[in-house]
Image (cartoon, rainbow, N blue to C red; front, side, top):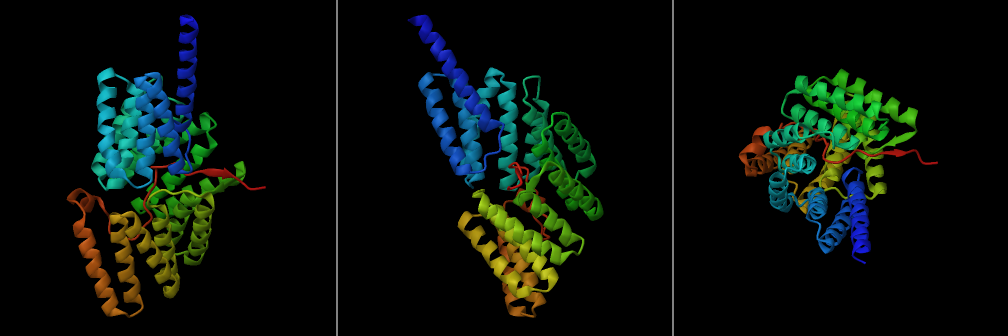
Length: 358
């Protein structure tokens, strides 16, 4: 009886570990559903008395908590898991923790801390790292370097991530790598190179029969705006928002970003009435979800729009709101923001490359 009980317990632990790996190494479309699944896995790990599995499950729901917008609570919760993993020398768990922590700091607006955690997430990789981790952690580091103005340092990590994705036939992750690389070049100001990488991403999607998801389309839209292709950008962003809504995702800030990019395209096109509708919708998202960093850029866009329309009093009001919102941010967040309208570069979730609908 005891031996059977031991075997049953081992089998249960293996099953639970596999279920956790599915959360850790898979793109979770619905963050709220992912949170519920992780909490249930934590309950099962606790019932089994397996502390290592419990910590893995807890990290999963912390990541989902961060994605649904409660990054402050996620930041509070992650410290205990980090202390536990360090004490036991669990390198793989530590690497995953630093990746999640990097994303929390990114959402908090602290680019320097994002970079430090991203570096640690790569340094801790060893032979136990999964293919997902080998690609994803390098990609996050490339993103963090790009966000901190180090595009020259970022490119080798983008290349490594791309090569690994091709080598491992991780085609969806390759889409993510190319998307983020394109946006990194866009942020660095090399708009022709950004467009070139974006075309590679589009060609890859066509070759593999994928529909690019909303996040990838947002990147393309931002690059089109930078290259003066406003009509194309408006169309791209309309498709982007439709796909976002049809996918049923609920990440904290994405819709606000997409609406803001759409407003910029419409302003460039001269369709300022449509742009005001879009930016007002982005403003509502920011207020509802406490997206203070994006709100700064929303006010900036409103000021630009009203100025273009000759509405000087409204432009002045929006500019005052912009300054107040900017100054309300912590000093690190103010220092690392670039106060130009743009779509924030997202590596905090996988940009899903879904199979083309039949």
